[in-house]
Image (cartoon, rainbow, N blue to C red; front, side, top):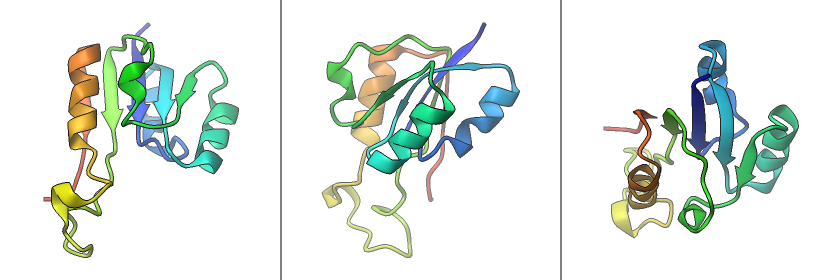
Amino acid sequence: MKTFGSVCSGVGIGDFGLLMAGLKPLYFCEINPYRRKILALRYPEAKVFKDLKTIHEKKIPKTNVLLGTLPCQPYSKLGKRKGQEDPRHLWPDFFALVKKTKPELIITENVP
């Protein structure tokens, strides 16, 4: 069975398409405590990690697919556009996870 991991997961709505495609979730990563509780209830078989900035220190399961819905505020035209100076700039942390886990497919999105 194909598997996936998800970071900046929210409550897992973005992962629904992967579930419908038959992939099994192995882990999620979400900084918001309430959203982590929702993920744990929806996906009791998956690990739920707290922080993308420290996830590399944990034992992360290898997955076929990695989904990353990174925060857009650092670059959004509607935001302050602080880019790398914004603490929500998580691209380097996401890329470090990609290098560590080497998934077959990466799905991510962000603003232009």
